[in-house]
Structure formats: C-alpha cells, structure tokens
Image (cartoon, rainbow, N blue to C red; front, side, top):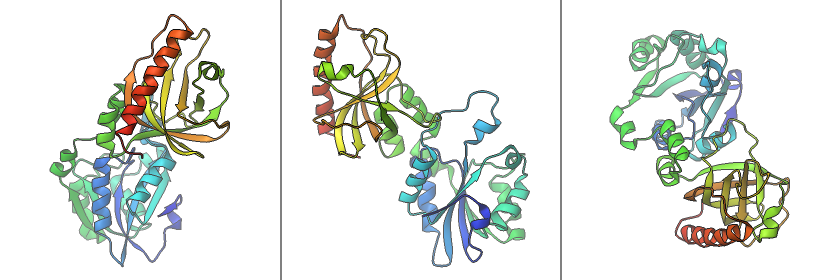
Length: 311
C-alpha cells in the first residue's frame, strides 16, 4: 500500500474507488467497507482510503476529544492488511472543515483523486454543512461522472460495532468484547523506561512502558493477561495498569512482566495485546501478601493464554 500525505502526489493516470472516514481502530464495521472497496477495483481502478489526521473532533470539539483506538501508524498498518492500494492522509484543519460538500467532491475527490466510484456507509456525512450524504452524492454523480455505492444499513448493523462501543468495552474491562468487535486483540506500544525496579526484588521484574502517543486510549486500571511483543518475539505476560497501592510513594504506571525472559529492554519498544482482564488493583498488607497474589496472577495468566492464540 502506498501512503500519500499530499493530494497533489496522487498519480494523474489513476482512477480511484474511494471510501472516506477516520477509520479509528479499523474494526469489523470498517473492514466490511474495505473489503467492498477492494472488491470493486480492477486493472483500471485503484482502491483508495481517504482519511484524516488528527481526529476531526480534536480540531472541532470545544471539550476533550476521544482517546483513539489506533495511532496513525497502527491505522495505516491495519488498512494495509486489507489489501488497499492507496491511503491518502490529509491534515484535518478548520479550513478543511469549512469546505462545502460540493466543493469537497469537486476539488478533492474528482480533481485530485479522479473519482470513478465512491463507497459510503448509509449514515456517513461530510462537508461543513453535513449535506455530504448518500442522497447528495447520487444527485451530483452524473454531473461529475462517478458512481455511488452504499453499504446498506443492515450490513453495517449486522456487525453491531462502533469505535464508541469498543472504547466503552475497554473502559469497563471487557477485553473479550473489544476483541470481538475489532476482529483482533486491542494493543498498544510503549518504550521501556526505568521505574523503581521493585519488581526485581519481588521476583517479578517488569518492563515499565511509556506510551508515546498522548491520544492513544489506555484501558482502565487493573491486572491483565496479555501477549507481549518485542525484540524477544511474542511471549505470554501479565500486565498491571494503575497506582500500585501496596507500594508507598508509587505513581501511576503501566508495567508488564514477561514470563521466562531475563533481558535488558530499556529504550526498546514493546507492544502488548490485551487478552483478558483478571482483577482490580488491590492494596495488600505487605510485600509477602503481594508476592503471593502475583504467583496466583501468573498461574491464571498462563492458563488464559494457553487457551488463546498469539496475535
């Protein structure tokens, strides 16, 4: 897949079959659209995803914008897996948001992407006046010489999935539900930084992760069974997100203990895949009680992961 960050870089001799959207998480609903997009292409037409960065709500919302299921890099990787030919990433600006639906179709889709066909969800809208819907596209399709294909409501609703549902599932520790909606394990990557190194003294050394993208959604605090991926390959692990209440002076951290691994991972990137929530953070009477619980967590985590496929 070729990724373009400038509309002027789109090849002049290519006619496109396009879908527009933020595609946050590239969940099963998005995958349905991308499968159809790919199916409609042939030797004379290329599949094109037109997407934005940052998320439009970050620019337009007066309040906090939603945390994202995928960084831009993750989103592009997921779209590439669907076999799409081009993804065009356009900076979302106030000026772009003020472009009318008609101007967007003419100036962007037709003049820049040489639109042959657009594939659109039944409820998708674009343009500053929100008139860029299915009916509008059909009304101008003859004038601008392109086809319109709708993804019917029943197809999208059959997946019963949305980015909001997935965010809610992760906030409520429902990892399995998130996996079901996404079609893959929710994951996040972080750089290993130095922590207090207390885990080593407990017999459970951890990689302390710093998530570099501030917009990335971090699941709710708790203890999880996860797969960990890095220079060591993919290994079973258990993860703690929270304030480590048993440890005096501890601050909020994201720590992963990777089973049977004794390597220095500092400055390396580690990705964790959320398989199952195991328990809430607890404050124990002392370190001995904490160690006893960690042993139980290890047994439970290994059991869970032994019955779940690697990512």
